[in-house]
Length: 151
Image (cartoon, rainbow, N blue to C red; front, side):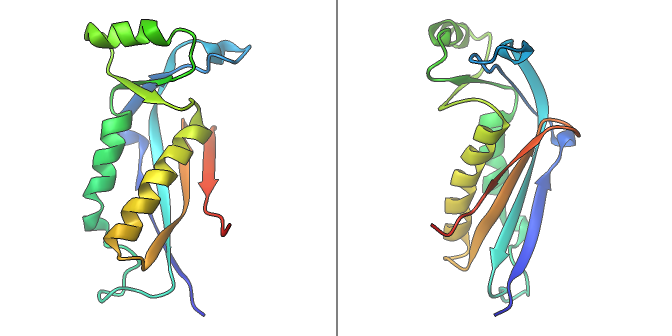
């Protein structure tokens, strides 16, 4: 059986700038810091569509909207951060645009994007395609990948 793949990248130049902290870290990562994130999605299919495409890139506007909603000038705060109420107050006062997340870090952001994009692509392609992986890059040296499993 033939398997096809294609990918879509939302690069650093898109301005998906978000700040967060890893409050559990003993390093400088415990402090607020931010990046212009890059997201790369790899899609898989056993069969191409009527245009001979895995995914119509023009139909991915909803994916970019989700990225902007969650990572465009946002402050991502883990729900178990001991300073959560402080961040919530900053949000209520209009100082930050807070997004509550289960946990912070590239791996978790890749997992969030994998969860959303998997449902999005399955619905968009009526089950023909799936998301193979999502890579999130902080910059050229640091990235994390969340991969599809068959479990």
